[in-house]
Structure formats: structure tokens, C-alpha cells
Image (cartoon, rainbow, N blue to C red):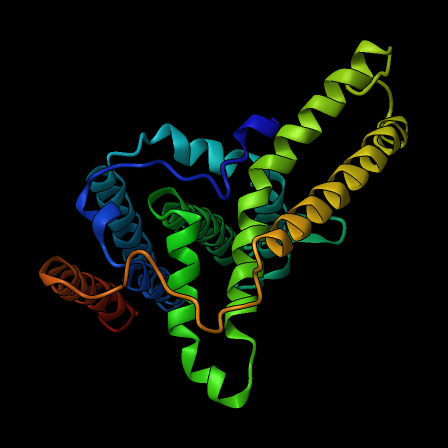
Length: 268
């Protein structure tokens, strides 16, 4: 289960999506999320999924990675769908039992919401799959640079976000090692009632927190030993700049997202 969590992982490649400017990919991801909620109809959602499938094909990332990124959030998707299933009303009930009433509108909206959440997770995962953490840090810092005039710690914020994202796979590996060690000592983590399983997590959480604090302390010490003192006077090996490919990708993405948004008005 823990191996299925792919958030924060980067898959190197040489596709046009890997070579795109990270600022364009970051802004494009945000625009895609907005479009997912603007195009609230089956046609718009279908086109959004088709666009996502096209991008995964261009990036040459296996589609099984989408399933691996979605597997950990299946309970959240089910919970969201159930909420919309029972709490959205309509005119003619489809099913009624005790205090629960299901309407066709609720079923339709629950399916759309579940598909929308899955597309959202798969879309944001594509950003980390095709962008290294260091380059993503530079993109976030560059986009937030105007806030620096208001004495906002832009570099520190970008660094913290990227470190947190980068440490997710590390903490997942650490958790799996601790679980295997506890199982070797006779801990019953996969059996018993729900309460017993929750209690069995205590011997895992305490070493995990200690390990996370130790890694944070080691990282802070390593940064201090290298005379790190923020972004002031810091230079970069690779300066971000828009090229011809980036302009073409931005234009194509704008047109495709514009078509999806138009479905909101054409198929209302």
C-alpha cells in the first residue's frame, strides 16, 4: 500500500513535457484544476480526462502510475461520492429507505465528482512526475518573486514546500521499514478489529516522528555547514527562460483548456 503512494516522485525523461519550463507546467496545472471545476458537465470532464491521457502519453509515463497515485485516496473518493449521493436532492426519487433518499441528480453528480477528484490527483501528480524538486523550487520562487517587495520570504517558502514534497517518498520508505521491523518482532498490524489496528499504529508513529525530527535536524545542520543563509545573493546553475517549445506548448494548452471551458456554455 505504501509503495503505491507516488506523490513527490520524479521520473526523468526527455519528452517535450519534461523539457517545458517549470513555470509553465506549474501555471498549467493550476489552470487545469480550475477548468476541472468550471467545466461541471460530462462533456467537459471527458475532454479533461482525454487531455490528461494525451499529456501522459507525451511524457511517456505508464498509465499504471495513475492507478498507483489514485489507490491511496480511494477512501476519500468514495466518501466524497457518498456525500453527494445522499445529500443532493431532485424531483423524482430513485431509491428511498428510512431517512435515505437517492435521486438521479445525486447519482449523476456523485459520479462526476468522483471522476473530477481522480483527474485532479492525476493532473497534479503529472507535475511532480515530469519536474525535479530543484527546478520546481526555482519555478515557485520565480512566480512568487513580486511578493518579495512586500518583504515576504519567497525563497524560504519555496524551499520549505519543495523539501516537504521531496521528503514524502523518504518518509514512506521509512514507514515501511518500521512496519517490517515491528512485524518481525511479532506485531499484528494487519489483523484484529479496527480499534486494535489503530492501537498497533502507536509503535509505528513514535519511531516515525523521531526519525523525521532526526532527518530534519541533520538537514538543517548540513545546510548550516554549507553556509546556507537564504536566497540573498544566490545564483543558479540553470536560469529559467521561455523558449520556442514553451511558447508553442502554452498556446496549445490555452486552446485546449479554452475548448473545455466552452463546453460549460455549449452543454449547459
